[in-house]
Length: 326
Image (cartoon, rainbow, N blue to C red; front, side, top):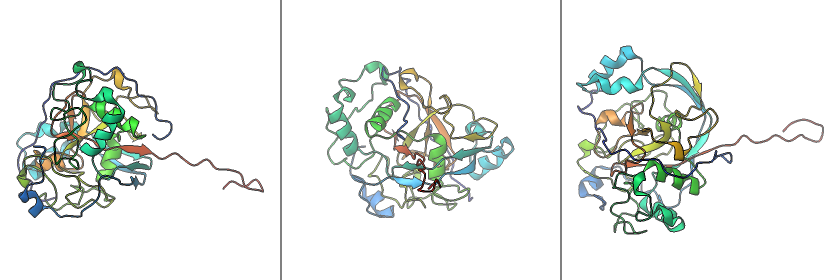
């Protein structure tokens, strides 16, 4: 890794109260402006079409999440950080095994979220229980209408509850933290960023040093090795997990804050959730594929969005004509 710029972006939002809706176990597998000329000049354009896209399959595998406590001083130097405590949440380094899954190549956009609101009017700003958010939920929307010119911007000012509800409506779910990191690595073993170890700059991601100052259209920068866009910068992304200390031992398909083999029930969630990926206001350290931060479930903000995932069910084998299994 090369030397990184100083600073760490921290998101601070008011905590929200729990939403009275129940997440069933997914047994089926389950600003706002046009891009500035600065962003258009610096970004590597690939011109994807985020409105209708197929999910990307992420092969399962085992990898090490987190870092050893002894490596914190080195990481602080690498990223030019004066405050070493920002790395405490990444300790300890532990082995994780993740089953194959599918994930959206783009963050959910305003245009897609509008379809959800039309189909589910109780999630419109004037219908949602105000106790479940911090007052910023869809603050710039008018009913089901997002600000003009922002159809392909990632939807922001949404809560974790709303992200969960959207994913459920779409027949998907949020990715787990482990799934998100495996996807962000883009098929690389231990990269610093989704694109590899080259330093972050304005041609690779929308972050503080890019000088944009707000979220921009999804897919403006080149994807990682798996074909996933904006896994670093633009907006932070909610995942399923509660923000908690990493376990010391090896785990398989972990979801912090949920019983083994299940997912969190959103009517019971009040604890802070993990967010990943950094945002338009973040420093290079926030773009690191191993970096994690926390956010209140009701903390709608213009720097946090989400993307969806879906499990891949094992195919049931059927006996052949001679009793052999195919």
